[in-house]
Amino acid sequence: MLRFCDINLHKLSMHVDGLFGNNDGYGEYGLGLDKKYCEEKGLQLVSYLNGKASQTEMLRLVFNQGLDLMDKGKLDETNEDLYDFIITQVSQSKPL
Image (cartoon, rainbow, N blue to C red; front, top):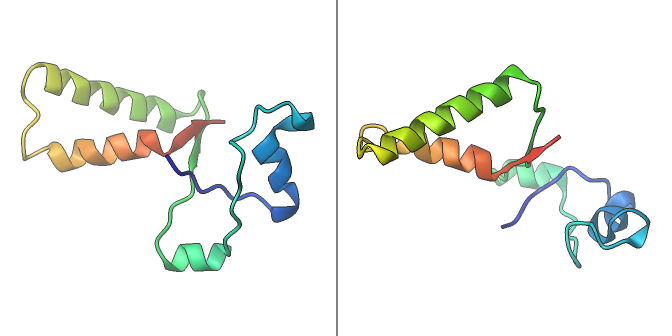
């Protein structure tokens, strides 16, 4: 999975390698792109979720409701796009 983070280039090595070079970063490579270019092309930054925020709780609730619909075989074409959106939000999110 690719994530687009708003990281200043001078701080990129810390995020790639991890703090103090202890290999707990994002991976071996980092790619710098112009923020305005990314915005114009419709790229979305990763969302950071605060575990104490009401929005995070709401996302958790609707995600679980979607899972319940799937378990009951009630996920159909009328609500599939909505649940696809929720899955995308969760997949592009990271704990704060």
